[in-house]
Length: 174
Image 1 (spheres, rainbow, N blue to C red):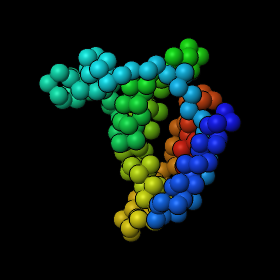
Image 2: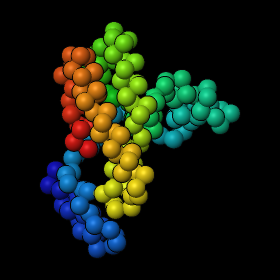
Image 3: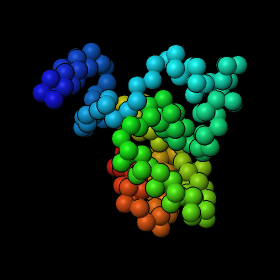
């Protein structure tokens, strides 16, 4: 871990020296444990048609089948989960428990989808804001997102799963 911390420090120093924008948006570094995920090479991803079908479209791929997300953030997360599947059985069980909770509460799930429909690409929006390249339209979008958070919180509380609420809290800290 000592080498990882040194490498991260060197990378931040390099970015500070070479980038024209400030790095205030980098406020923490967390380790990425590669052994928590199955390593899939590009050949495997292509052969199994995980992201694109043999015709080169997303339609008949695993991603095309599973991605019913109503936000670009969700679609990116599903894509990441497909190409980096979990290995740890406890983490898999936790993820399945959350899915099961959502599945058992269709009204709640629908309300969350309605809130998500009103949210723009929060990750990209926050990136633009922290890099000071946002415009007035972006700020209006952020205001709309903020208005939806109370509804989100209510829906996540109803799910009654600690990990689901943790996910909401993490989103609120972004």
